Image (cartoon, rainbow, N blue to C red; front, top):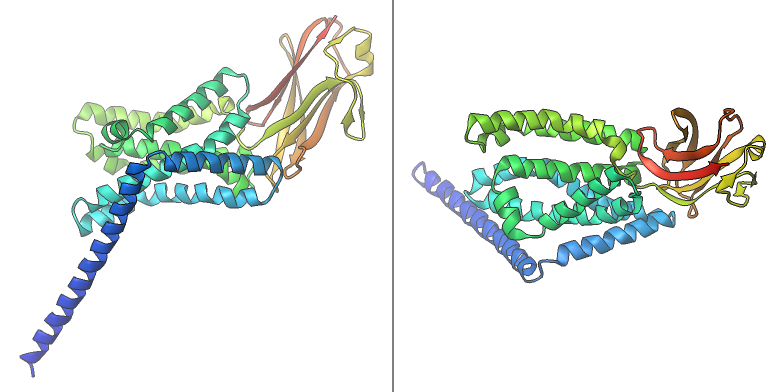
Length: 355
């Protein structure tokens, strides 16, 4: 009996090893077929994601709850980027080369999905502001780079440091775009959460990044960039488009009746100021999101801020206005009213002239 038992156990181990081998082979074959499909149709993921992004943007514009379901797709991709280093390490331990192949393949596809999905929301929130234009241009370039395999594989995926930094950038884009829609976070909450979360994730993956850099100088530069990136993101947050918010109506007027503005005005006399001036906006936001907006009245070095609260979900946008009745004696000139988030993100710029 003792001589039979080891033979029986070895047979079980052989059968299990054979089944594991067959299952692994089947999984790899499926991935290979999927990769072959994307090689034949390389623009399938970007085009589908871009179309899905516009669909989500239009649904948010209409105030439909279905937009949350659409945004969950991008959020799922964001979760993959956060766990990708762990999956890569696990697969590499199982079989050399598999982790790199699987992780790179799925990461590139998901980065394309996230970037192209979020682009319509970013474009829709972009104003004629230098910071907005630069931020949106970088997002467009990043989306295009994710689709050009030779560049992506050579300059992004080849090293853990660049790969993880690109992951981090895509994670920030996903967080500021989909978090307000999926978990009803206001922008002043979702942006700090995105910066802190991605900064912490980069710190956790720091050993992996440093391992891919072969000289002390590169490692020091990388650590400096790692520390500077979250700080720069926070300091430059006012130049980021207020993704998810869109002004559907805006004008300067002198009367509002039951949240309906009167005739728009662009030029006023000093005598007209006695009646007061009103900055009126209708702002569309994701359903369920409570957001504070600030009206900044600017004239020369003078600044007066009036805050108001809006609630998302209304198709035409939540209507809100700020009335200014006290003006300085010397009021002639160009007045500007910036409608911004508490972080300083520009939603709309209005102006009028006092003659």
